[in-house]
Length: 424
Ligand SMILES: *Cc1c(COP(=O)(O)O)cnc(C)c1O
Image (tube, rainbow, N blue to C red; front, side):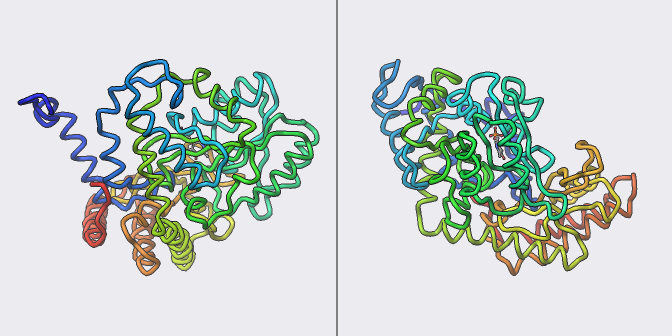
């Protein structure tokens, strides 16, 4: 039973309550195209807001340092079993607080400080935690970065092989935050095997596509697979590591006590719920629809004269290259946000502009697909984007005129009225 007469959030903290309500409204009313975001289901959100946040549970199911695990142990065990089933993995650790700690745990578990590691460079679409210099992974490890080919902006497997032979890395990362094509995990594994390196696949962005069977799985090929649970997978904010049984003890020890303390049990429960949702046949339909929508939006944008990195997409994201328009993407992205179109400026391969004002717009389709938009709706989305981008360019250094931004925002709100936002 609840404590009688306990005031709720609205009464206790009207400021925070009001801001959360405003955020709900913002997410409902805007065209959410940030490639790393999604709408978690109501069930996932419910699991996160529970008494599980009150509980300490250092250790693993059956091997804890505290009492009172009657409910937390079965919850974590369900999350582990479902993750293993969903991805066909030998071992799962569901405790990483997020994607970055999951990656650090893999390095802590499989490498020694100072070891050489390799990863796709940030400007080529890689992630900070794959050895970029400002990240702990680039500070504590000797990171060598590979890239994409200048000719077609696809990952340069020849360069990767040459660099791997030269530097003999202990571990090679594959995975990305901004690469619109499929990854050939078998080819990465072959190179890793040739030089005696571990292969770690980071599927943070594409986990939902892998789970839904529309992107090849790295699980048979990689020593360890990391992911966030909140991107295409539609779970709560969190991380997950899958690995071969041979690495299970090292990975578990790296997560706890190596890197983390008590697991976030409310997140673990919500991960279990998300894995259950992703195990349903409807999730395969969802994953395929994300890719179909991305392709359709790409076609519609190219039809309006926009240039896409690699000329299209195989996954959930597009990179629009504004180099031909001769403008920086940062100001355009800000103006789009004023119109209710949410996306982010992103470097394109071999970008001549600075990372703070790069040439690309990164566009992801997971969120709109969660709202039920289909291919037929993508020409409309492209039109909103085009109107806003042209309005922004025409305004030059000045912000997009508010009359235009408000008119577009109103049209978008009306358009989205037919597509309820899950969880809100
Ligand atoms: C998002 C992302 C991460 C980091 O996830 P956080 O939860 O933000 O720490 C790691 N790797 C890749 C490839 C990502 O896209």
